[in-house]
Image 1 (cartoon, rainbow, N blue to C red):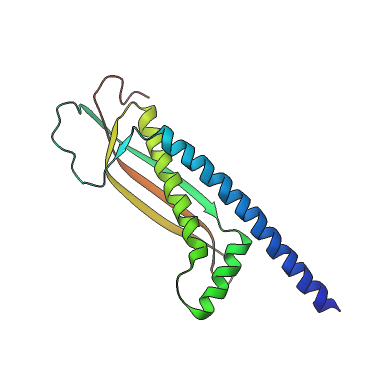
Image 2 (image 1 turned 180 degrees about the vertical axis):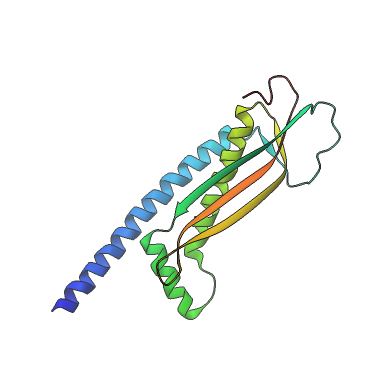
Length: 157
């Protein structure tokens, strides 16, 4: 009888993890979409060097960082996937949200300092292990680049 209660508890936790995880992910994506539209004027380039432009008079390193936790349901799906192999799609949306959020934070920093574009953008990603099984507990994404501006108020803090 105790095993039945444990199974019911497990299924309830799994359903709660799924429900709250989906709600949190949907809310975060809505916030990301809104801010991406607001910051569309800050241009981001992966090229190492900007084009020669006399309008760029100032530069500064800018960055954005985010740590996002893995919800219980995604962890469970990843565990199941590890038995059979293949893509762990339950983590793909987590990484997508983290990368986009970090990029938005970098663009916000560039905008606050008066810069119009960011060049040589690089991403760094790390997983933060949790527990004895070294399961992923959270992921961190850090993005950085060189912000360039015209010099009219850019770079002021």
